[in-house]
Amino acid sequence: VVVNLVRVVGLLSLSSTGNAVLGTNPLEAPVPGHDGQVLDVQEVFPTIQGEGPFAGRPATFIRLAGCHLACVFCDTDFLTKRHGATLQDLTLRALDYHNRLVVLTGGEPMRQNVVPLCEELADHGMTVQIETAGSFWPIGVHDERLGILCSQRHVHIVVSPKTGYVRAPIRAYATAWKYIITLDPVGTDGLPTYGTQAPVRAGQHVARPPKQVKPEDIYLQPCDTGNADLNKVIIERCVALCRQHGYRLSLQQHKLLGLP
Ligand code: SF4
Image (cartoon, rainbow, N blue to C red; front, top):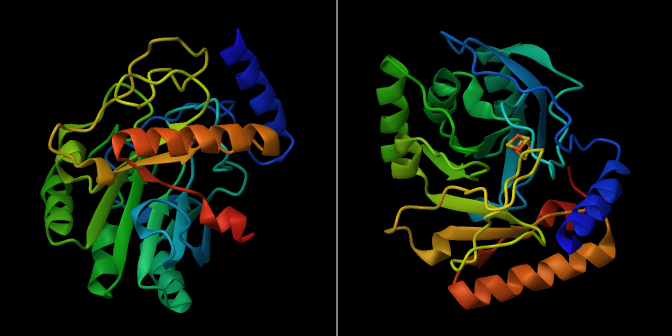
């Protein structure tokens, strides 16, 4: 009951921000047979990467539209400004911002074929970080091409599991695993056991990293509920879990700085 109450309080607070999706979005399937030449995009903007392994680096964010999941704590708008953008448009915009790091995020960026865009950005000397829930990996020729980009460290995959399933290539190539911490239950490993999708089910398994992943490559990120008191409690819990298990604390520095 306490957990559910906290969840409701948190969600009510979040909804006051006006642009959080909070699990109300339609579930959108992967785009079949996508050649990656025109992408469904929400927005492109320069900022400082605020979280995960590239925190602190100036970065250009390309936020792709739509998601196949609907997480109850989702604080992102990936719906309202969606538009088609060509590979050339996106590359030129990234070049205009002069950031060596480009973050492909969403929504779920891997719903679409982002491999041609990654290749184009890499050809121009940029490093690409893909933020994904880990549900999709390209098929056919793009499967191998994305693997090469990851092996050559032109592309870094940061996986943030929201369900019990992460695709095998993503398990193999991910350089960081990121978990959103709320006041919901965690397992003996300190990672969430509570489902992220509405209706939320207690005990729903959230995918774990492979055994060989080092604790310092696992990031715990406090959920931003929009309620300062609740956030403080969640951050303290996150700090305690990091200290107990050796995980890395990931704060959303861009929000502390008032950046997008
Ligand atoms: S996977 Fe990410 S973008 Fe999609 S609903 Fe969940 S938190 Fe939001």
